[in-house]
Image (cartoon, rainbow, N blue to C red; front, top):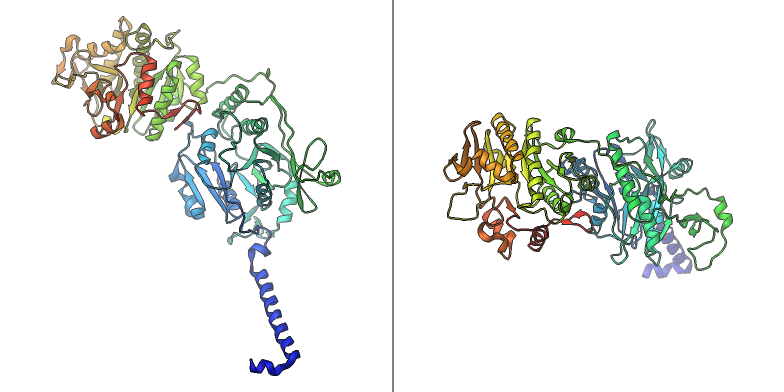
Length: 636
């Protein structure tokens, strides 16, 4: 301080100026070194930047271009997290190795047997992730930094909102991210391309209304739309326009078109096989049956005029985003704006019929496991919800090799829209009673004979069959155990409930759960069962026992087996602690059925020995052994 005092006024001023220059030079150096400020490909973030979660889904048609798209998303902001819905985590693990903790894989949604994800299941799952903004996007779409700017503006609105934007189609994107992940470069010469050049190129291309981007602020009290979302297949048409129409009709959110302020590119060289046309037709049928696609809405548009964002209506060009409704027609006329094409669907518009391109013969190689085994279930429309609970349980246990035989056209159409591998039995009995097709009824007798006939057909095609009625609840996958019994053995559940008598007593073979191998003795024995059932006035169940174990059980061997003498097929009755029927041990009477069955290490529990469809449904639901939400049409 003494030396400073000796400098006088001029000296002090010189010292302060030198300090100021040093600070200025330091700040300038920071600008030069900071990629987020010097590079237009990076968005400058603030402490109030919203947390953004981008959702997409992978399926069988996904391409290698996805990695490029994910890079573009994660480069937008450090506040961006990507969630990929995928059926095969192992297949997609390379993504997490490449992109780290900001990319998550989620396999808990519903898929069709061909691997197509369900949109309603995806949107329901998005609610499990905590973020300020959710984004749903096609996995083949590249995003540029102005997407974040548009989201930030929407995030500042004082109401709930839904942003939609169309992408431009391009067969080949001639750029790539450099190794630093900070800029785009030309594929051929490696030269850096500026953000302005990309924007200019995109603005000259045609937009694709079918693959729009959707983004919305997360508010549990304000859903995207009113009502229930049908089981649309993701990226199979119709559902984007359906959601926009329903959101507009619901009037809970401000819905606007940001196509003019969001630069995005959709790689348009991903082709679907012709066998997938039914998926688009199915979505069209759902869109026509539910919702308001017949209405036409004009969305407000988000534009950027004089470096600030404004909302304009399509009709009069008035600013609807500011408190002052000033005319901005001049700005609008100068703006080269893109917009979504939302064409209404006429109520009387004819749609092509929904035809499934698969029959039993073509489905078998698609669904069978490596052991050439399928799990077969047979159902009519009165049991469609129980069928879906059974399917959901199979999915939960990672048992994908199931197959559904539909007894009527209603079940067939329902199963197609639910993405199930289904075939229709043209010889199934007609006029199946909705509520009176329970055990012992004439309807039940006719329906059960379909099962043995279908099993025999599949066995002759060279596939093993586990026949499981839809009222059999699975706790564990029983296939590894059932395979262990070896060839020439038919393994079946016992219907005996008395704990003090043999489980192979007369007519105690339950034909609602059995495993049959595709070998000579089994096929020959099943032919005898089908022939016997065709001439019987009873259901197929007595035919199984009388044919394989002999009338009165004359071919019984020990307490748990029978041997059919002509074919030398062994029938093994399953341990009831592991495979209990509905009357064994009063399990259904227990307060916690699941706990009791897990204590016994049950594989399955049959919901039989109860009369009436409604009573059966009620018992299974009340005991917590139900895996399907019928109101939402998705697994729970």
